[in-house]
Image (cartoon, rainbow, N blue to C red; front, side, top):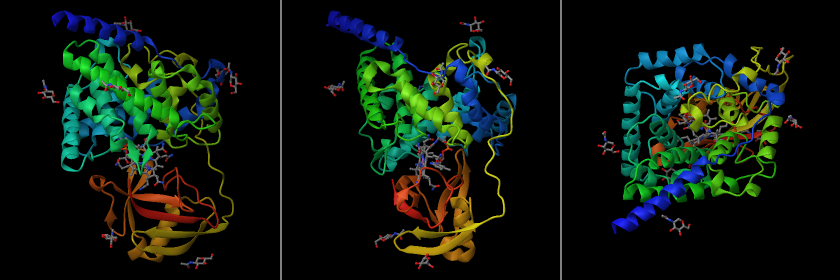
Length: 430
Ligand code: B12
Ligand SMILES: *[C@@H]1O[C@H](CO)[C@@H](O)[C@H](O)[C@H]1NC(C)=O
Ligand SMILES: *[C@@H]1O[C@H](CO)[C@@H](O)[C@H](O)[C@H]1NC(C)=O
Ligand SMILES: *[C@@H]1O[C@H](CO)[C@@H](O)[C@H](O)[C@H]1NC(C)=O
Ligand SMILES: *[C@@H]1O[C@H](CO)[C@@H](O)[C@H](O)[C@H]1NC(C)=O
Ligand SMILES: *[C@@H]1O[C@H](CO)[C@@H](O)[C@H](O)[C@H]1NC(C)=O
Ligand SMILES: *[C@@H]1O[C@H](CO)[C@@H](O)[C@H](O)[C@H]1NC(C)=O
Ligand SMILES: *[C@@H]1O[C@H](CO)[C@@H](O)[C@H](O)[C@H]1NC(C)=O
């Protein structure tokens, strides 16, 4: 008995050590670094009204070796102003920890340890909420993955068995409206990879069992992510591709070389930069690390953050300017709110207006029917209620944005509307 257990442990250790060495990346070459400038400019020159909005950006800049004292101070201020961090969601707190803890020298590897304990609590609250509300977390699995990643990297306490049981591909939280969320799957792969590396140091039979299961989950998630690869190399859509790349970098032992042409993905993303795909700072922040061959797992590696910084040309030019508004010409769009019934109107707005402008115009026309509320999030304004009817994570309800009956891939603050378009805000379930 004892003997066989030891033998299997040896096998287990060999199995676990070898794959963890592999990490295949592709990255932008030095000659082409200047093509990343628009991303860096967007991140550095944007104004962040709340510190937490800058967490993604600070994390990303640090990973590619750019210091930004100003943003770091904003985040530290947030921590001090808000001792309990009560109004932060678990994932926001996790991002705060990742951003503040990133790229410290090994002799100062220290993030406020009380932040990590607060995250332990918030992670438990997510799980408790799942137990009471039909498996629905307070937030979502993207954030639970951020939680696990931060706890794993910064030595927080969490149950590996719990994590193993949560992150199975069959879990409904990997899907929104039946569609696999590549962003979520990618973040989960990063988190599970971190957890897996830690198990190598533990050696109980439970660890061994969990290790096998986590391997299986990772394998299925990677397969699913690759199945979302498009002809042009994007994975999911342009906004999920950066994190999908990171996930594939750290899991290259789970797929064959011919299953993913990293260079093709990289080239397609580079072409999208000058077209303005990453004008939202969070979008820029989420794509940049992968383009420089970095992943969120690198952020506690000593000194790995700094390499490359010397080669980047940081020019603090004005941010990419939007087309100048000459004498405004107007366009007509159709707008409706759909709950059970559909409420419609026609709205005239200046050319170049965004979805939010249309909603505001409609609200002026008929306050009772078209009133709405927004909150400012890291991606910009997020619609939380229309006609007083509020989105609710426990019920998986939200306000979906559509154009000509198809969901749009940007928020109300970014989506530019065009003449004759049929816009809709629909009460939906994910
Ligand atoms: C979970 C999630 C949702 C959930 C949010 C509710 C929940 N249960 O948490 C649901 C499914 C409802 C959702 C809806 C939408 N989403 Co969404 N969502 C995400 C996801 C996977 C994680 C967000 C998160 O928790 N981040 C971490 C926390 C710490 O940051 P946070 O800022 O506090 O998070 C909040 C906001 O991100 C907000 N939020 C979620 N989605 C969106 C989208 C926009 C445009 C805005 C402004 C805010 C927002 O909800 C989060 C929780 O409160 C991201 C993926 C990603 N890469 O970020 C996509 C993502 C942000 N969503 C996206 C989109 C397009 C939408 C929709 C506009 C889709 C649609 N056609 O209706 C709607 C939003 C409409 C509205 N009401 O304003 C895009 C945004 C791309 C862009 N350039 O703007 C992303 C990047 C996915 C993608 N790859 O395309 N989403
Ligand atoms: C720089 O980018 C161009 C266009 O994508 C590509 O053809 C070229 O090979 C890149 N240069 C290097 C050194 O990779
Ligand atoms: C760690 O968390 C687990 C549950 O996730 C809990 O049972 C255990 O008591 C915690 N240990 C410490 C030292 O806090
Ligand atoms: C892993 O997956 C394979 C096939 O998908 C299955 O046969 C095996 O039992 C799984 N192992 C564990 C530990 O779940
Ligand atoms: C960490 O990196 C710094 C600077 O690169 C170096 O001086 C130090 O020795 C490194 N520490 C360890 C433990 O590798
Ligand atoms: C950096 O910018 C300077 C001037 O703006 C230029 O001369 C130099 O070639 C650039 N270096 C790189 C690596 O792009
Ligand atoms: C929509 O109609 C259904 C069936 O009549 C009803 O149960 C539900 O409450 C309605 N939803 C809203 C948001 O009014
Ligand atoms: C909006 O305009 C279209 C024609 O452009 C018309 O068919 C429709 O009836 C109008 N709807 C409303 C609610 O005024």
